[in-house]
Amino acid sequence: MKYENIEKHGITAQGKTELLKYLGDGKVTRKEAMLAKCYECTNGYADGKVDCGIESCPLYALWHM
Image (cartoon, rainbow, N blue to C red; front, side, top):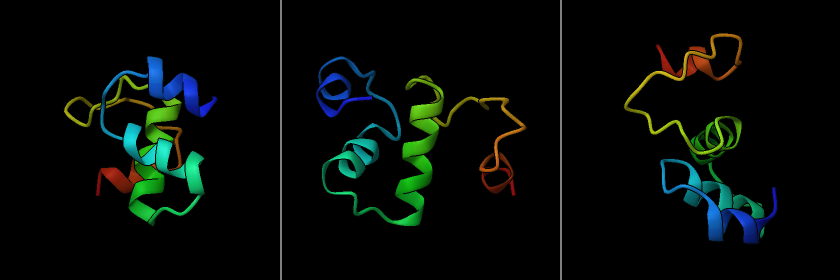
């Protein structure tokens, strides 16, 4: 994923800002990294309102504690 493509065409959802921040300077918090990964993994379609259902993801268990 390229920064310009996400910025221009990426769906506005939770994690987009964090992914752009990571791709920009690489400095993100643990939570921001998790949000960015979820955004990347689901192509921006996970907004946190609906369970992504990807139980095989290592981050899935962390969000459902």
